Image (cartoon, rainbow over all chains, first blue to last red):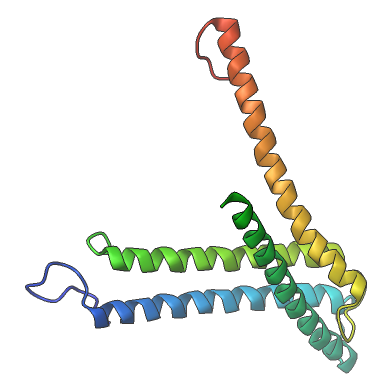
Length: 95
Length: 92
């Protein structure tokens, strides 16, 4: 990747370079979010589903983890919705 | 690199804001999951849990606002008291 300004320019990126840079930034943020979610899912669902670690991850534990992941995602979406609604309410109250 | 490029600066500011929003949702989800998700997760979120999560988000924001407002008020009162006592500015 070469983000150095074009030679002889005024130090600004051209349109293509700017877009390329923003795509990189967005991809990195998406990656950070996915990692965060993955970490939370493992942490929360391990706590919910594996109370006594056995010699393998048995099928009831697997089922529990699958269910837990879906419910955690539901919760994420619900929180995002609730939070967004509140933001909009506060904004209209102030504006 | 972004200093001389206002358009790039603006785009990055927007992305930063988006990222802060996402992070806040991650944090709130964890808090409200711990508070509301009792027992083993089932086929769907039941009504009680859904209600709890919605209220958890709203009350968390209320609590944060309350903390800020109270500290602001207290800070102003302390400042006024300090000024009255010493006849001038003194912090604490």
